[in-house]
Image 1 (cartoon, rainbow, N blue to C red):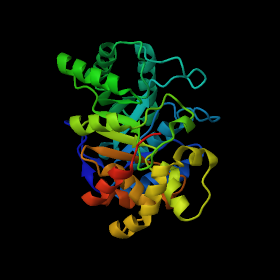
Image 2: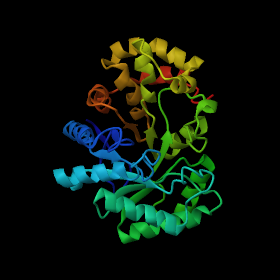
Image 3: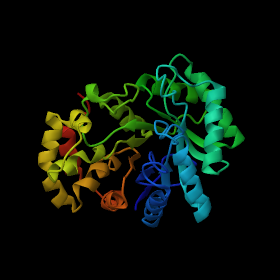
Length: 324
């Protein structure tokens, strides 16, 4: 596993981050422990969660963070793990109503600390924005959390480009650290935006990509494996209708045609090559990889050590459209 620096003051992190959406629910506690053990043994030290994960399932609230916290307590390895989690997500029943007041975000943060069994979070994300609030107000709140030591660094997730640029200006003017990282939907595959149900999600597009290339601000990419779309298609396996709707387009067809040659060239499977593309950018870029089984993890983990040649990346860039 290779490691990279996301920014000043944060420990080096593994090139892959372990996603934990269903830990403690559809992925049992026992299987979640096995995944974290395998990831850690392979050199992975970066684990991502969110307060809202599995809220849509019975008994799902807090399950991901509680499972991670139980594993860290049992393994006694908190100092060797870099934890990121997210708060300020709207209530799932009222997605149009933001939750960005000090009381709401502080409550999310305190609950995350309790369930993770830690007194600090390495990288704390705002899971959504509230564009009715001034950026300065939001950054001031996050800086107050830093001063208490409850978070070491902070980032944004699903924020519009204009708001990130404004946050950069405010941070520079106020002497704040500012957003260390942008957690965004990003992968090898291009997206049919109309097929994505949650319209509050922000996907990487050409302007946002250019922003990261210029600023070198780090990215954590969710849905980085395209839900297995490419390896499933190569193996003739069924793809769910929802994923087919999101990923079926002309540029992904071209990528699919080239993948067998790239597998041979890079000597890794398509399952690993897809997130390896995300990790191969000229700015710090961490694919978040999530699995329903240990076998899937073992197949994808070589992405953390892969090196993709420049000519391959240039070829991909010539094909990718990012979004439709």
